[in-house]
Image 1 (cartoon, rainbow, N blue to C red):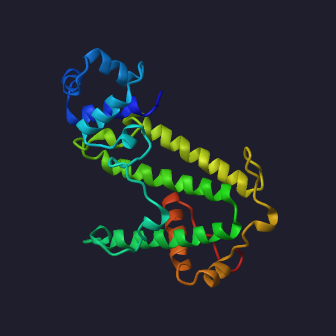
Image 2: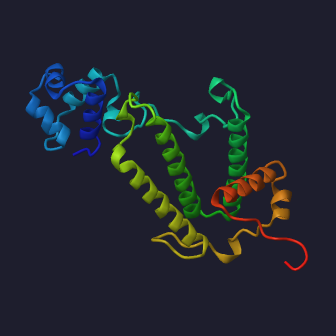
Image 3: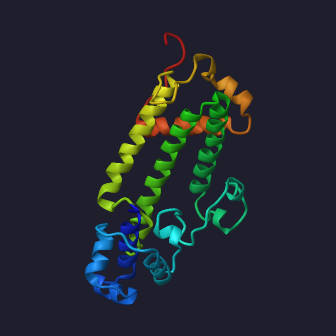
Length: 238
């Protein structure tokens, strides 16, 4: 039985503001049968999947959890636009603060992935990418949940559980990344070899990433200010 179908058809029905009775009538089945489908008690036939896709104006791939896009579209690496691609989505108006922070984060990510590429460790790259993915997801859900009228069908994680689940996923990704970076194997993934560990310093970062290093330095400083960390004392007697 497909694990996504019951959840997705339930979310789509609620998004439309339909009762089970109304949705069942529109789909040509009994309310009891629709209830079984939504609970995952019974598995429907292909004809019902197609009928449901037509009714909610989504693709069968979306209903079955095969695509996050309602049209069923998939995207390749070549089709993903560059972060600095021109277009109305990339225009930030008003305060300079969003523009500044976006540039600091984007430029720092260039340094981060440059270092990961030199490490050439698939597992470490996956865990750090996973951590960043969930962090962005958390930020997006904060903004999305600000308006109670926004449809909740976009997400699989219930709002009541999302905070805890996403924080747990962050902790797991961080723990696995730290272990791999320390040379400790995690599952089938071997830890980073000592000879592949990146040799880093402010001077080396500036030399290797002349365009982006200053952004990383500013990001580090800003993060530690938020953390309440004080910069080390310099001068005599330090």
